[in-house]
Amino acid sequence: MKYDVRQLELLSNEKIADGIFDMRLKCTDSDLKIECGQFAHVYVPGKTLRRPISVCDASGGTLRLVYQVKGEGTQIMSQMKPGADVDMLYPLGHGFNIERGKRYCLIGGGIGVPPMLYTAKQCENPLVITGFRNKDFVILQEDFKAAGAELVLCTDDGTAGEKGFVTDLLKQRINEVDEVCACGPVPMLKAIARVCAEADKPCQISLEERMGCGVGACLVCAVKVKKNGEEIMQHVCKNGPVFNAEEVVF
Image (cartoon, rainbow, N blue to C red; front, side, top):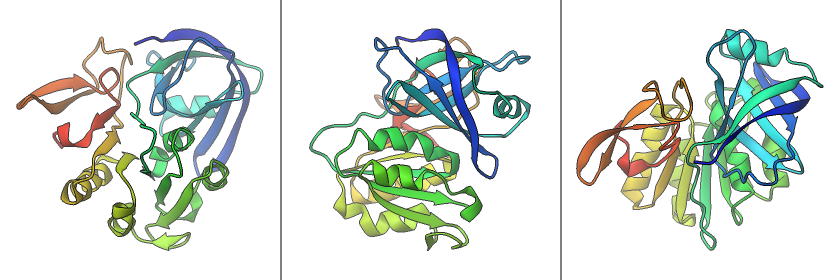
């Protein structure tokens, strides 16, 4: 795993939905190729542990991180001002494996939506399904359209897009795609994996777990997976965050 620690200039840090911020940083690292699905570990002043944030986009000399304020650390992040230097450890983790010639269905739920934008930019005519609790949390819709994706929006209460869950739409459209990639809450990922297994479609899922070091040295983000007929523990930060769904023990 090739990564580096850099001080990146903060270009903007704007609120785009209820509790959700869009951070953009000046990135001149032509030698570091970022894979879709990888993440950055952000140092927050006054905090011991870094915050893992999925890469939303990495193009045009800009690294884009879209994150949700969930605690004191991300609250401090949301108050960072343009011009500040942000200490970043990146790119980390194993991302999505995107093959040319395949049509992908990319599914994001809630704050699991941002990493699917950079993934969509690596795909040919992807079908993107985004799911949110309600209209107040909807993000990145115009970005997906600009990326050339076929976009379907759903909300739990029907206040934006179609009413229902991402799995409802997946069941309707799964025969139109070759493979599924998803990121979001574990119950959603478990349901998506089940739908894909029933349809005999390969599925990659990005797990969201609390992390300590971000490079596999601690045991905070260990999850159980199946390898060669045995159940073993692996690190989400190093072996993931992307796994083949059939390998994950939910």
